[in-house]
Amino acid sequence: MTNKSLGRGLGSLIPENNKKNKAIVRIPMEKIYPRDDQPRKNFDDKSLEGLSQSIEKYGLLNPIVLRKNGIRYEIIAGERRFRASKLLGLKEIEAIIKNVDNKDIDILSIVENVQREDLSGLEEANAYNELSKNYGMTQDEIAKTVGKSRSYIGNTLRLLKLDENSKKELEEGNISPSQARTLLSIKDEEDRKKSLDDFKNKKTNIRKVEKISANKKTITDKEDKLDRILFEDFEEKFIELLNSKVEIKKNKGNYKVTIDCVSIDDIENLYWRIKNGKE
Image (cartoon, rainbow, N blue to C red; front, side, top):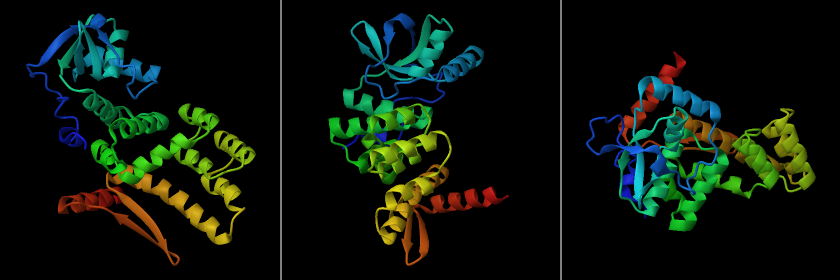
């Protein structure tokens, strides 16, 4: 099972805007090193430069979180802030030292990146896969820990089934996660390569590409498969918009959209979000 404190979010390990916290110390930059297995592998230079300018103007709003390892310190959370501070040539950085085990570090790193830094689709999928392999976490447990729906976790993990060329294009931002999942439905290698190129060159869309695979099946199978691809795409969009689990189903020509709310407050917030969106 997951650590309950992490399931509630990052607050238990990463204080937000808490400059008065007595646990904050200043650590020499030369004594700090990033984790080799942290989920984020790529750091956008322009984003780091923007963050660096913000730190120079306003200071470090949130300390990074470290774990002591011998005479050095390993970054648990805040590698972007660390890198941006290095760009400024800072000699020290504000930090909070935490004594946590490897499982909590892995989970915390993933939660922080997902909630604050937007991992790429493949980085996110690999991170969830590591939680599953290393700690036996189910998709439900991962979903509750990172604040996503189970279907979102499952759809993200599907990206790991892509061929290497498709993974490369996804990682470079040439295709979207939804387009990448559509490619998984195309079994013929040549058809898949053509569709990948068409996605990259903006010559096609998900509905057209799905027909390549569906044409080899019955009309019913084509419609069901195509609907499922489109449902998953819209479910993700609704989840990001509403912060609630959303499920779309088709029954005898009618479409049903179900939004999960766990309290009256959730229903009220959903109402005002929709109402304000119309104004």
